[in-house]
Length: 259
Image 1 (cartoon, helix red, strand yellow):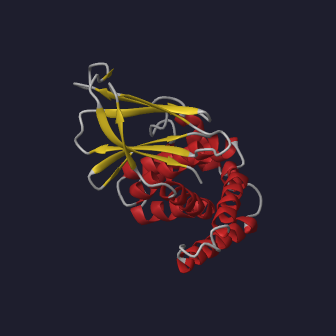
Image 2 (tube, rainbow, N blue to C red):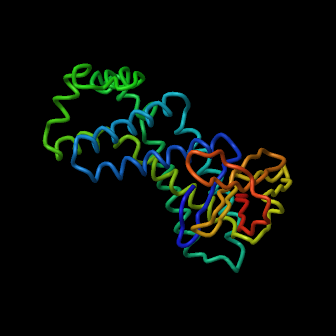
């Protein structure tokens, strides 16, 4: 979910690649936010984000997935070069940006972030992080000592650890920007709070985006796959009550990102 101007946007990825990219996008956004803080708790939050990023990269070959997606987007954009209605300057700029990112990714030696797996300091924190409250000072005195260092020293270390993920982060931001921008929002109505749409499996939709006015009494719950997706609008009177689908007709904006 994200908020844009006076709209709140709910997003649902329809394949595993985009799902992973969205999760990494969130983690990169969070860690950039926490790097702006100077307290030990800001640093703890940034470390938690870093460990989550490392965990995702440890489970799959993200570099290869990103390169495949950049190649796919580049091929799609090159097909537009002969269209006279396309802004050739903007198109060429995007293609140059993609080529530069692909070259940077090729230049990365070995798995991204692999050297951090042998960092005993980070490994010790990661091992204790699976225990609720397991990173107390008595559990990890070395971590406690490091958290007492000047903020500029802690931030310098964090930036150093994040450097190997930089090109991946920039690539994911570009891919998601192109995916989101591939389709304009169009108005729809969910009868009785429910909407369903079929999809052409031969033209795969990457992501479904639903926009509702900020301050709306409903939130969107989206589910789907290759063949169809559904949107349910639910209301939650208080945080302690179970959300329920509204019986009202709900006007909303929809974008099926096919690129």
